[in-house]
Image 1: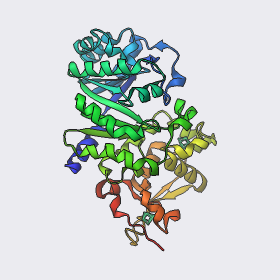
Image 2: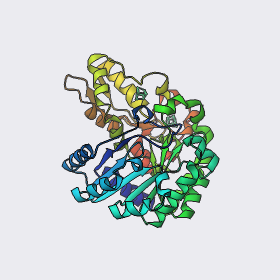
Image 3: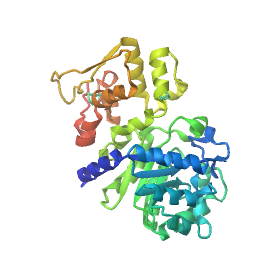
Image 4: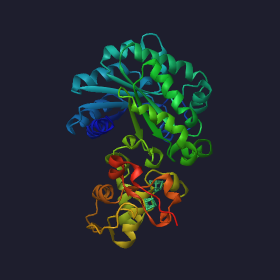
Length: 377
Ligand code: SF4
Ligand code: SF4
C-alpha cells in the first residue's frame, strides 16, 4: 500500500500546475510568513490575473492554484474563480487561512463560482498556539468556522501545517483533531529560514533529535489508506520509518524557480547570493548550494558513491563540468541523480559519520533508512 501511495504521489507531484498570486495582502501576520516583504496591501488587477491564467494554460497546466497573501480578500475573488473555470482549467484550487469562509455565504459563493479545492492553513488545533503563530486574536475561531464551512460545502479540503517549535509536540493531536472533522489530506511544511521566519528564528527552529518521537505520532497516521499526507521541504532525516513521506526530489526544481538568475550570477559574475550566510545551516538547499560552491571552485564535480555500510563495490562515476553553457537546471538534474544523498539520525553512532554523505535519496525512499548500518569502532 505504501509503495502504491508513493507511486500515486509521484504522479501527482509531476502534474503541471500553475500558481497565480492575486493579492499582496493578508489578514493574518504569521510568525513564519515567507511573503511579508512582498505585502504592500494591494491586489493584483483582474486583467493581470487573466494574463497569468493564459500563461499557465500555454505552459500546459490544467490545474491552477490561486494564492496570495490571502486570496479570499481580493474584491473580485468570485469573478476570478469563475474566469479560471471558463478559460480552461479543469481544477481550481485556492490556498487560504480560511478566515473569510467563516462569513455568511462566502463558502457557498466560492462553490457556485466553481472552486474545486481549498487548502486551509491551520497550524494547530489549539487556539492559544494558533493565535501565537498568526499573531491575530480571534483568528482561531474564524478559521475553525471557515474550515467547517469548507467541509459543509464539500470542497476537496486539505490542511497546511507549518511545523515549528510552537506546534511540533502536538502535531499528531492536531492531525487527529482535523481528521475527526473530516479532513483527509495534509501538507506538512517545514519552517525555512526566510522572510519573517528568519526574524523569529529563536521562536521557531527546533532540532530533529528532540522532535523525532513527537513527529512520528503524526507520521504514523499515514498508515491509514484513506489519508494523504504530504511533506514539503521537510528534511529526510526526520522521516526514518516513514520514508514514503519523503518529498519527491523533483520538487527541488520549485526551489530553483525564481532564483535561477541569482544562482547563475554567482557562477558567472561572482555575485554572492543575497541569502548566503548564517541561515544556510537551517536551509533545505544547503547541500545543493555547497555543491554549487564546489563546482565553481573546482570546475567539475563527480557523483557520490554508496556508503561503506551498504557497499564497497566500485561504481561508475559521473562528472559534471562547468563551462560557459552552465545552466542551473541541468546542474540540479545532475545533483538530484548523483549527489542528493541523505543520512539517518543514527549515523552519529557511526565511525564514518564525518566523512560520509549517506545514501542516495531515491534508494532511501524505496528501501528505507534501515539499510544504513552504523559501524562502531
Ligand atoms: S543554502 Fe543556499 S539558498 Fe539556502 S540560505 Fe544558503 S545560499 Fe541561500
Ligand atoms: S551508517 Fe551512516 S555514516 Fe555510517 S557508513 Fe552508513 S551512511 Fe555512512
